[in-house]
Image (cartoon, rainbow, N blue to C red; front, top):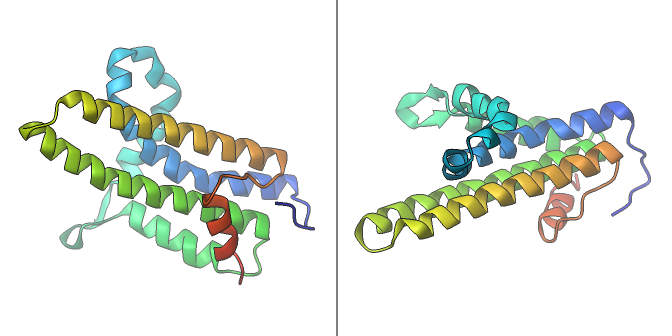
Length: 169
């Protein structure tokens, strides 16, 4: 994907920031790997802190709304839907939000697997699922951030097309 507008260094920086959301949410799946390889946790400590202190902080406890929900909605309505913001930033923000939606669906599936593993499935299946979610989240966000730093649009099948479609204001 190549659009006419060139990404300035400031646009590149701003386009990397939304990826903190899926990166931080994906780190929770790395608990099993962190137990097996304790040094692996070191580069992820800022993301763990962000998730535990900002994203999972209950802002409206009786409705179950956390900081993650308000950050998600704010990014969507204040960045993605604002035509005054450069397309490069809006595209990367939308792509990060779509990654977050995938992680949310994965979280629901993981909780379902956890309930099944107490009854019928071995914990190995839960561990494989968690490790796959963790590695996938880290690789996808890492690739997208790398492309943003280069000033290029990342091309992740289906995800990039959906992000591009949403950015058409």
